Length: 338
Image 1 (cartoon, one colour):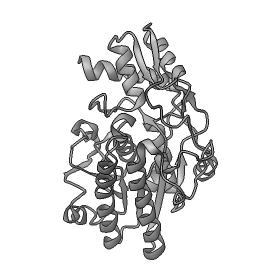
Image 2 (cartoon, helix red, strand yellow; image 1 turned 90 degrees about the vertical axis):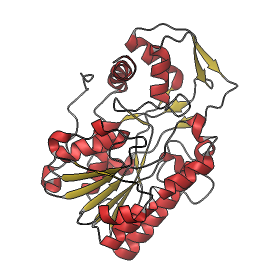
Image 3 (tube, one colour; image 1 turned 180 degrees about the horizontal axis):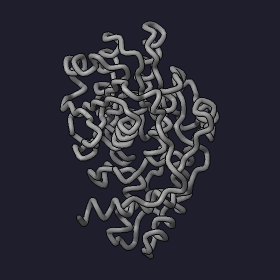
Image 4 (spheres, rainbow, N blue to C red; image 1 turned 30 degrees about the vertical axis):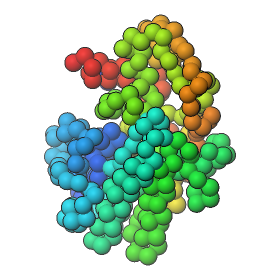
């Protein structure tokens, strides 16, 4: 059973989506699971294309008749076949990992994210698809970006150092989408989400894990002490995947783009407060040790939400961090004790 939410979740516009044919790249992945479910509930005719390297079949809601295409977006022929007859393509496919893995594999993150992004975009342009959504990332911003970070022109300076390869891949995808919107008339929406989490997360390894599932696992596994990289004073904004999916769909509905839009807000949380919240919700009382010999990334990472609020009509998250952590504790039980 899911954790209680602070208010009813946003719903996609049934009038807009009903009957539309939508292809979701990487729809069996973490964020895709929320996007696909909301599209299907709104009456869209949804097809998912995924190579299942990191996705799971049980993330596709069969009750809504979602079509599954098992295929690799790095293959141009597969992409060309998949986009035929689609009104909208949403590409959520990405090779994304936590800081520990990403900072040591910039080349892999650059190449693999370009390969799973550009062929589908090209296929959609060639097939005359009307709408296309590109998932960029807040990792495109440089380390010295103003905080909270507005939607900067990211071709000045380098992306954040710990995710530089990933950041460059997302920058190039944004650039390609902007060119194609200008040259072909395709309605391109570009979003830059910040630190998504939720109970549909798939655990791979500690090295590749993102911060919330990693800390939840350490606390719930009974580690004592729990060692946290950095001072604990570093700050991050976190958003539940369901809220981020709803905001993405609203932006597509309203034809936002191709100017990038942050999906995130400026009410960030200290990592030490996050750990304390996990302990409080779970009833755990381990000793917490902050290892300042380890990198902690940018000291503060959150974004300016003005454009998001304007384009979505004032949408804000419905799931509080406390409720989201309660859901992640249930995620831990399902993932490691079922």
